[in-house]
Image (tube, rainbow, N blue to C red; front, side):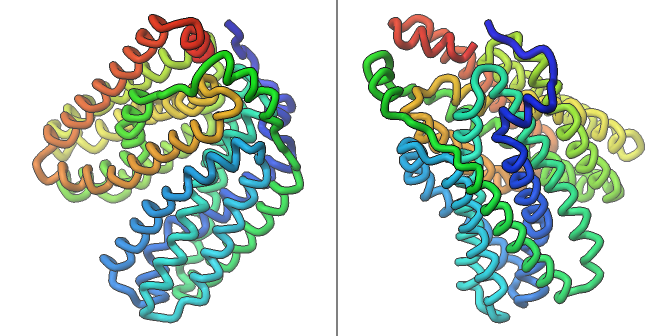
Length: 414
């Protein structure tokens, strides 16, 4: 079993698409960090829309954006790589342009802008993963995917901090941030396109069609919908519990969010490399167990009262972040290992559909469960995540019991 035991920065940059592509990722993430956390404020403060109307438009844009994923998957399977990445950035340029052109009070143009931003945000992860899978292989590819996530989180964090510092300027500052975001997307698209990465799936397709069918990944995709709830725990669940139910200072929520970002940036690659000695599917199941333990930890922490509750929640959030890091380092890597080369794009598109759906429904699910008490929220999340981890592990056993082609896929996930 091939493992990656050392982190070699230069090799990692090459495996991630090269230095120009790394700069494109950083610029794109910086632009996204400038606008995405404050898009709701843009709708309310600049366009004078109501908060509910703005929120609904943003949600609809994100969900409807998922409709593009089957077409993105087919485009990737025809061999396109850097072109799709660049297109996902360019469509967000169009979204920002529409945002800047939207007159005050026009919710429909704002919703259209949110739709184009949603299309770009949904298409990018699959396109990026396909590009990395083309230039890197085996455990080096896993480390490159992890490095891309760490770099993106760093860019998002830097962009959000810069935007926060500019918010004192009011509506003019928000419009300026949107304009800078559009320019950042445009620059990132030009850099990504200049990499000129293209796959040649024809030969691989002929071989793969003879050797193995496309993986169904039903349990993995269903489990992923629950797994991605962990991504919204620091942003939605913990602030909701800490501020509204535990009467803790909002400083705790901010500190937890910052700690989550810093941990992901610093630990995503080392943890992924450390766990490369184990099968990917086992690591993914392990992440579910860690996340389940953290949810039970949150349940226990909220019972400690106002004095010790907030510090305990902050400590448990570190465990939750570790679970998130393990999940992020193994889930996409497992999909790229299981999928035949000629169906990689469609497999990644299906995976992104499950991710996008989970991210879309998790805020509603969390806010619906929270008023019923900590047991309802954290108990439900723990039970669902543990069940998902079990489903991921059982699916591996089923694949190993099948014929030779599926046994080959099970080994690919190792």
